[in-house]
Length: 274
Image (cartoon, rainbow, N blue to C red; front, side, top):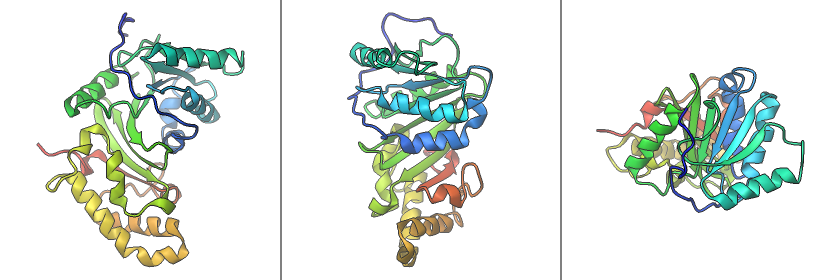
């Protein structure tokens, strides 16, 4: 592992956070990443850049423990005051959160052993695209063998989110998740694309073609609105799967996941052109 440095790598984020803001990605992680989460007697998970409040790290810990009772979670922040807030939270509940801790750090991940999973949400939006690609490489290199990086972005209340998973240093999947009752068009999720893609949503790029096709499927599925917005979303995803490599089987796909307002595709469906 990289030794602890005196100056964490990275920049201070806005720190915006709120309870349940990351519930969609947490729900997805606990349903689809049980392999890494059950690796070894003490699987380590890192929540990188949790923000001004430790609430989403605590929620991640609580949700992970339901599927991996021995999982340990470390919240890492570059801002000392935010680390102090996490430690103060633990001081108020001594012994209640065994395996949960908070450290000051950045992309170097100053933890005692390689994590099996890193969740980095709303961390890279302020970086240039090239720096975001570099951060993917840097974080991936610090994972345990078979570990996974989950990096993405969501809105302030967690109704719209997009995230990418990486294994072995390579992007594997992209997931779009939304509160379908408040969605006008699937392409509205473009504003939550990861930094590596957000500037690629232009004609000629795969991600633009995908979102345009999704909008067409959404329009074709309009008659299903009579059964509710969830039914319309499921139909739109099923239509999209006819022309795009949508994951259609568990754990990544199928109606059980689609009804939650999710759709997951292989990274190749959106990978930027040269």
